Image (cartoon, rainbow, N blue to C red; front, side, top):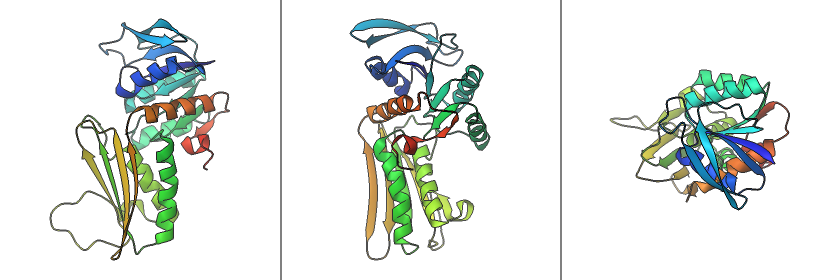
Length: 264
């Protein structure tokens, strides 16, 4: 069994990962981790694991041996647990988004020493969408305007979503667009005529929406819409657990969900 630690254990994603991992025979859940000072540190989580209830303490550090840590915390939390994994030479799956460029550089450097999988979205369907968005943009060409629209719950802290930014990057990669010149985030006021190669990105924060992403490709005669709706967070949880199982035993390196799904 894969010994699993979960950072951000009491959050929306972390708590569900713990619940589903407890019932997954591939995993032995050994650590539930939160930031120092978190009000739930020192308390316990009851989970059903292999037909019995076990109590897992919520800790801000752990000396328990683990094989892989799944991180769904905050950017600062990622960097804290990344140091932990580097010190103990443990694999890490990062589902947290909103990292700064400097933090991303540190994550990339860490992958030289440990197996590290980072994905802006763990959904199988969304990762297929990443692939298709780039292919569609390249096929349709500059005559089609591109707009990316994402909707999440009102508690989400980063905008645009990491998924929207990965969609942006996929399109830039296949079409040769320029990140600084061709991307705009929202619009307001008097604006000039839309440049042909512009990518517009828009973030909506509405109620308890789990996650919705659309890429619109439109010219003066038609519109093509590539769309993904997540109905439940279990979509991402199952992807994260699949990633963790895949990463087990891999050599040091930087991986993503396209590697897991063999879509590279």
